[in-house]
Length: 241
Image 1 (tube, one colour):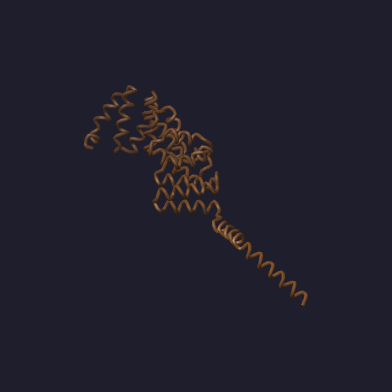
Image 2: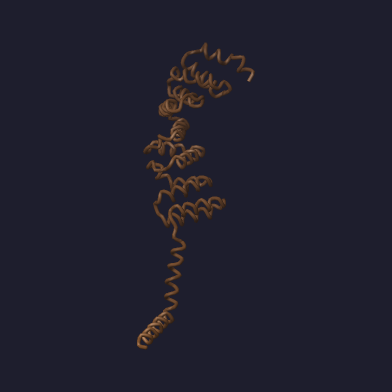
């Protein structure tokens, strides 16, 4: 009997405590529930960014990126997901602000780095491409080497461009486009005789290119090779095109 009375008293006490503090206890458990419900990993946050990007709504994307970065400040996975999503959406400045520091530190993976330098180059951010390419181990990526060389060329840094195009030629083998840019860079930096062999090789690989032919004619003329320049301009095959 005594045990039963004690148990009943305890039940009553607990029930009374629950009654008088029901609102406080309810709030505590609901807060814990929502905290557990909303808890996610950086990978989950990155996934939410990708889902927001697929909606095509820039406002929704920005909100998703902001929330993810607030939850995981400085997390490379979240920053990369947000930066690439912004770039894919055409928001280059926003994307660069997120992953630019990672790119300069050489901490972006190949896919992210390729997308970044491509977007920057296409939109004319040549200085940024050069800065990123010159940092860390980024030049280990062939895409970065190519855009680095092309950006130097666009900036009229022909002597520097020639050095990078020559390395690109060594790494990736002869391509008409690389040979053309290397030869043109040499010609425009005051070395037309050194330019001629590269432009001739480029021309043999792509005789349809007016750009290659024009630069080769210029290089011939600057090198004093007037017979070769005249012969190329008088090529009947070229006149028919």
